[in-house]
Length: 159
Image (cartoon, rainbow, N blue to C red; front, side, top):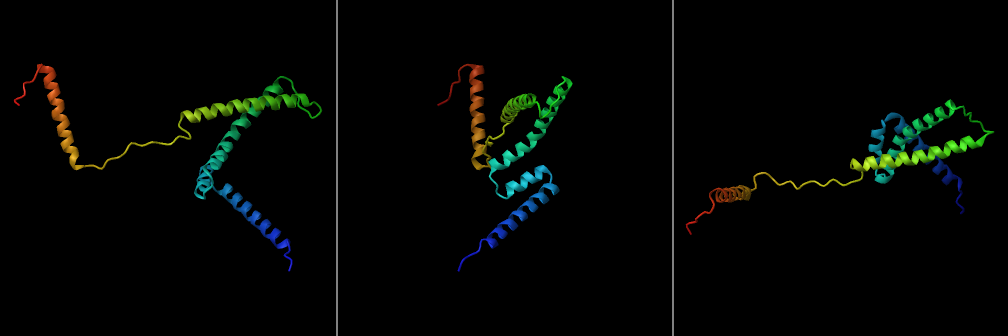
């Protein structure tokens, strides 16, 4: 009995359509920070989620740089047309170089602010440990004896 490929293809197509519909609903109904949180809760790899988040945030930076470059070219009298490809190639090359430099600056700024580093916390001790009062008292007496020895010179101990 031969298995037809049509039911499998239809099932895969239907799953793709459902996944895309779910993605559109999530993107349209959630804010971006909520969307990132949902992706993390669903178990997507942290590197993938961070890459998507940084790409989304960096797109606006790239858009502003591209607009600024187009305005500068326009003010200098360049008219971009498909007949003259050299200005297009120059603009794309300069844009890619600037984008790479800006990405390095953003990455270094994020590293300085602690991105990608593991937080190390100091160990927390429970309050009222029985030996802590005795240890504090002993340290206080020792500090007092040292201060007295420093002020008076030499202490004659009775034993």
